[in-house]
Image (cartoon, rainbow, N blue to C red; front, side, top):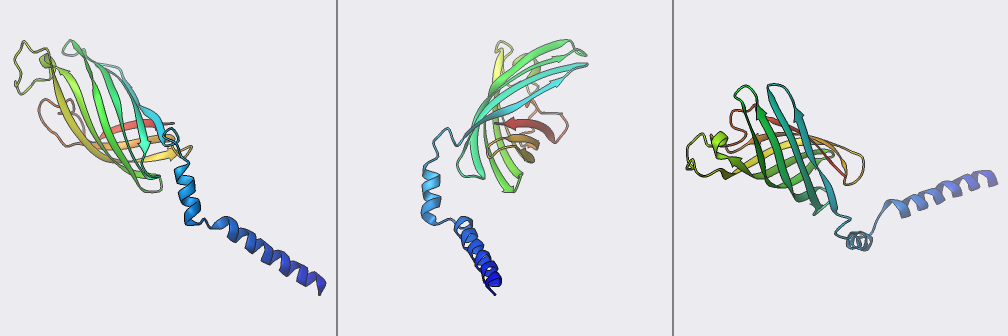
Length: 189
């Protein structure tokens, strides 16, 4: 009989311990969220790309993001791309910035919006002939939307794959005539 009472006592004690660890009060949630500093919510990452052949493309695009909530972040970054087309014998650089938002809709699946503003060389990208030939470069905005999957290795970090669609199908867009969707692989730490 004592043996049965001891087992019941241990089982009840374990439920009490689980209940204390399993539930967090509102005060504890508020206390934990207010203790996070700016740098606790900040992450670094970006994407890069290499392509060689008749076309050469080298892309470097670092970014910094900020977690507004555990599922929603905003951020910005810089863009640099060297592009060479050996079939038509030209090479150019594309540079600028980007702003983005990312929202995790379910576990590691997210939706993404990006606004890229880049400087393009008039000679190679002004297909609509909007700029005078004496103007060497012009700025162009490309809004992109899409979705992706991130394989996380920490709360803020992981490796992600995104499928993006260009909403501005203007002739001067650096994405004009390229295959859709745009596939990007990036990382965050």
